[in-house]
Image (tube, rainbow, N blue to C red):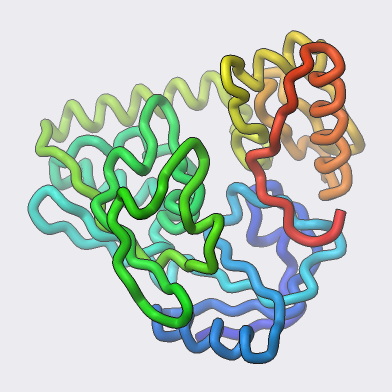
Length: 287
């Protein structure tokens, strides 16, 4: 296990903002995670578990606790028949690539999501009409210091939700079930989705992807655009004119800039349409 202190969180989030974490651990196995959590809970110290940081906003003051990073030290991907087992630190793009190379279809939707398997399970990540709950067979989690297997039904997947959000669980890996397909057709679909992503999303700036959850019956981006907020900025943070559902770090934004912008957008949309937007990003630290 790698242990660091005063680690800048701006290096571990796709927003590229955030102060320092007091302690920073990089486990290499489920046993490392179990040992770390046991120690932290015995000492009653606060901790969070992160992956690629693609859905996090960490405050400028940082995090006065321990961050456990599950990433490339736990990123093995194995294939057996029509199933793929991926450790929590594996990038979704890598899993999609392995699926394509083995002519397995059903995971194309995730090929451009810039997150890890663990993060994707945590929030039931999805894109282009696909989401994790459609492909998950089971998930290996650590709960109360014990490694256990959870079926897809037991994960209580919903829109940007899983049982992991509600309980003290840590995702270790998952088995996904796909279907045999044509490698060229899978490749073409991934290429098409990537083209659509590049055309419609502001990938040239650091962001956390879609900043807001989709309100029932509405689209967050359209509500924000119709509120006249395209290009609206606070400090170095801006509502992307390319896709108003994205808040981007376009000019050395601070976490405070981004947070204030999110608050402004939420308030203005509510004033105009009486629809309460909820952030999709997780807020870490004090704002």
